[in-house]
Amino acid sequence: MTSIMSPPAPTTATRPLVSSAPTGHRVASRRSVPERTSSLTTDKEFSPFRLDTTNQCLWRRRDSGDEERILLQPKSYAVLRCLVERAGRLVTEDELLEAVWPDVCVQPQAVKSHLFDVRRVLGDSPKKPVFIETLP
Image (cartoon, rainbow, N blue to C red; front, side, top):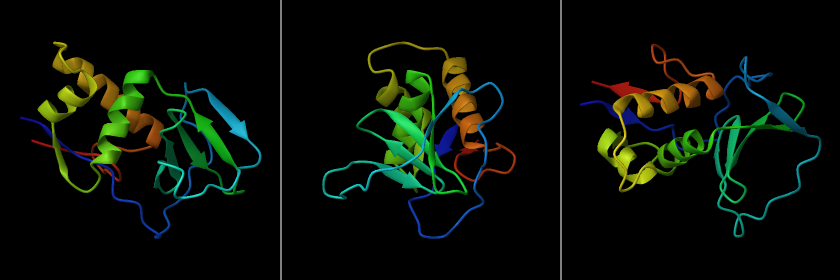
C-alpha cells in the first residue's frame, strides 16, 4: 500500500523561492498582499507557499515579496489541502480517498494523477521530495 507523507509543518526556516510557475500552469499575479489577522484566517503556510482555504487557491511568495496565485484543478487543490491539514504525519491512500472522494469509487490512477499535479505545482520531485513523500 502506498502512503503519503504530507508537507512539512509551517516553519520559520527559509527555503529557496521558486520564481516562476511550472510549465503549463497559469499564474495570476497580485501586487500587494493585505495584512492578515491570524485569528480570522485559516490559511496554511509552508514556505514559499500559502494555501488560502477561504478562496480555495494556492499562493507562492516571490523573491520581490509579491504573491502569485497558482491555479489548481479542484481535486488537486483538495488533495493538497488534505495533505497540508495533516502536515507532519503519514496519510494513507484510504484516508486521502475518503477525504477527497467520499462515497465515490475512483481508480488509483486518479489519485496518482492529482498527486503528480500537486508535486508539479510545488516544484517537488518524488525522487528528492521536499513537500510530499510517497512510501511503499
